[in-house]
Image (cartoon, rainbow, N blue to C red):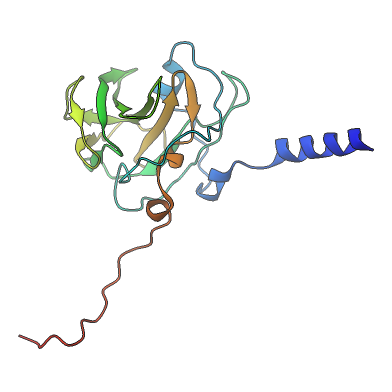
Length: 201
């Protein structure tokens, strides 16, 4: 009886979609170039130790997410090692949190910027953004919200222009949306409210 219950719960857990599918809109592009290029990378994982240090989205205020986090079961297994954020070519790309630029250059023909996040443990969390034309050099200290580059017109694996946003700790892929606190992740558009008691000019 207990064995049957354990088997049933295990199967249910394996078949359950990852939480970020709530954000996905059905694109079926392959993982980004940087995700496959990390030496010694391990399968993606959920990490309850990821601090919600993000203070801004990488692009826009609340960008559309054409494809969300889909962790693979093995290093080379199918999945999506990050999230895709809809963004127009030339749009500014911002650091989501304070850190240091650990890489700014090209990988497999795509512009890539990677930022090690301050105060996130050892090894530190590292965010990646592609395709991005870097406006900061490797080694630069950046603050949350600082522009680190612009979206490149080509090189995106999405069907429409996008930024692939990744998160790693060492060689393990994590869900970058876990960096964002609830107030930022679920914040709706700003609304203008009437101002009462103030005379018109």
